[in-house]
Amino acid sequence: MGGVDSEPPSKRRKLKQSSMAETLADDSIGSKRIKKVEFVRLIAESLHSFGYSNTLSNLEKESGIAVSSGLVNEFIKLVLDGNWDESLNSLRKLSVLDESVVKLASFVILEQKFLELLNADRFIDALRTLRTEISCLSIDQTRVRELSSLLLCSRGNVTKPKPKQEVIIDLQRLFPPDVMIPQGRLVQLVEQALDSQQDSCSFHNSVCVDSLFSDHNCGRSQIPSETLQILQEHQDEVWFVQFSHNGKFLASCSKDKSAIIWEVSLDGRLVVKHRLLGHKEPVSCVSWSPNDDWILTCGVEEVVRCWDVQSGECVRIYDKTDLGMVSCNWSPDGQRVFTGFNDKSIVMWDLDGNEMESWKGEKTLRISDLQVTGDGKFIISICKENMILIFDRGLAKERLIKEDYNIVSFSLSGDKKFLLVSLVNQEIHLWSLDGDVRLVAKYKGHKCSRFVVRACFGGVDQAFVASGSEDSRVYVWHRETGELIKTLGGHSGAVNCTSWNPVNPHMVASASDDRTIRIWGLKGLNSNHSCMCRT
Image 1 (cartoon, one colour):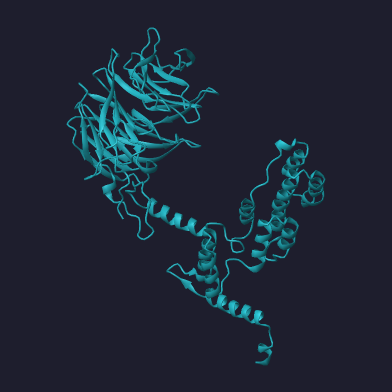
Image 2 (cartoon, one colour; image 1 turned 90 degrees about the vertical axis):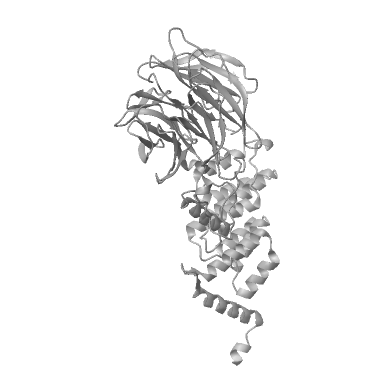
């Protein structure tokens, strides 16, 4: 006993804390046997990041567990103080680190030291640091040459050193996580748990923030399924509807040779903004410009008209003698217009109506869709009854998607990486365009064998697929699983097209041969209440 009492008080405290930590090391919590020591350290790191220093101190004292060792804390303080030479000495005292990690961390510290010297016009000291400290590490010689070139730059062009906290983050990426806990690790784990719950929710369609006090559960009530409004301004079959990118407008076009721009009012109801008249043939489709300032309308084997959304005036007509147009779309930057013709060619125009380039051959069909990928590199069209063409306009190379049955229509996802293809065998196929083209999902249940029926992506993260149907219904599937989760009845004629509001996941529009457009929303709620979630 005398031997123990003869030890200094600081040593005895260290032994006591070590004993508590060892006891906790054997403890676990929860069904997954989470290590209590790690859990406490994560809480401590979060308290530190929130600035709750007093609470952190009390937690470390009561638990006997420090968020980091004394040596690591000393090292972090030296980095934050910008004491680079002492930081290197402290780094070498961390015996738990591999030599390779020490070298990489030394490079991060010395690079910061070099940049600070350079910005302080201490060129000789900066050169000495580069030659005698950085170069001898034999790491990332490309970066070493870049740093060397900075010595020749004028004062105003020198790369600024990073804030000290960013240097700490760079070092955290190099250190083992049990030595220096990654910043915000506990928050990251909570976010992963929320993402996992949402991913497993077949009906996830809520844009509000989940509470941490209960598990995520949307339920079917988050899928638009109630008719909130019936639009009856068209005089014949409505063939196409499409919301603007900002979700503030809906465009529709009809066999009655007109198109209509509808405005979504603050209460969620749609009102007529402009009637677009001038086509001599039925209008088959529309296309919003990327900034939603302009809209294209395509007459069946006629012309494409460009309209100013605010004024409703026709500002340009795209026309070609003796040829009729069947499709239209915009380049991603909104500076070019693409049109498909009934001679199976595709033409690119500038905004003034001048033909810039054309591609002849079997590039499109008489009844066709036309899409351009997000980088503007690829044009997508139906080139044969059962084949989709992905045309690289820069390299003039072609890739093909071949289906076993005739293609009715297709739709490109918002991220331009997936393609929905509707077929006459009453299936919709989802193709991935990212890398190698491959079929990833199929959707069944709707009716499509005689008419042009269009499907769309929609909902939060475009997690759903909606389609019209010849049986007068709208069908909704879960995009990933292919599960049919809703059928919406109300139309009295074939539903030709659906469009999901890209901003409000609780608003869907459907166009029908019954001459109406139905706006679907949540039961018992106005369609503008898009942040109502069920817990």
